Length: 172
Image (cartoon, rainbow, N blue to C red; front, side):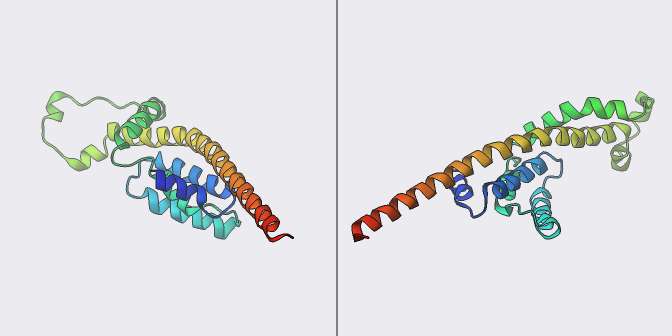
């Protein structure tokens, strides 16, 4: 973790580029697309660079995506579901419940995936992911921008002191 933190701070680019990449990665980390998050973040960062000339750090985007990993996926997606499900429930039309005889006829994966409950769960995850992704991205941007700005200012100060010391030692 420390190596990743230091690598992110030492990365080339303006604080806004690094913080923007982090915000993009954090937003995508909240979406229920495990396994596609990293490629999506890299593609969007590259598309932003080519289409808008707005630079986003691909390294920071990749680092932000790792907020959601196999260890944290259950709590992250659980929170997304808890926040998004009530909204999804209100958006979808009410459907009659299955009777016990209908439910006991067997397990049919296609029926499960097309059931209103599955649609509500998926929609709830997506809505919750977006609703949590926006403030997470904003907060990640602010924190990363501050950290990178302070690190770069300290690095410039050290370089300046070193340059003054070398000038004084050489007598110029």
